[in-house]
Image 1: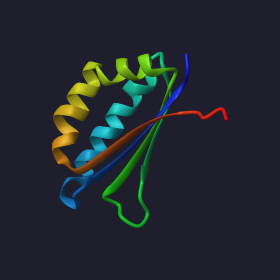
Image 2: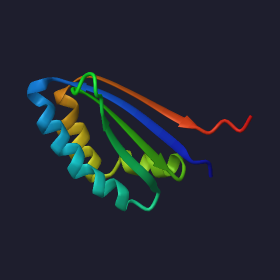
Image 3: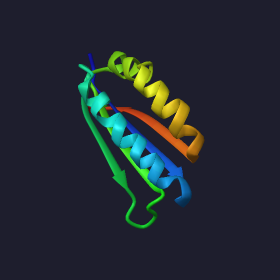
Length: 98
């Protein structure tokens, strides 16, 4: 099992920012309660507050898949947050041992 890190960069609007932040804040404890979640950080750009970066760590890809398929992810991210984003980039990374 190899740990994976997710770096999600979200762009929203000033009008939707507070709503997106509230949804992400409510998602965080659910994610951290998942057995495969090793960390879940939410960051906001100093230069552009409508840019959010989420850095998530999971035990392995299976744990990440369980997170993405969880009811709280589907309800909060897929149904509520994504429609409020103007851009969304997600990278899944693993440690390079070289």
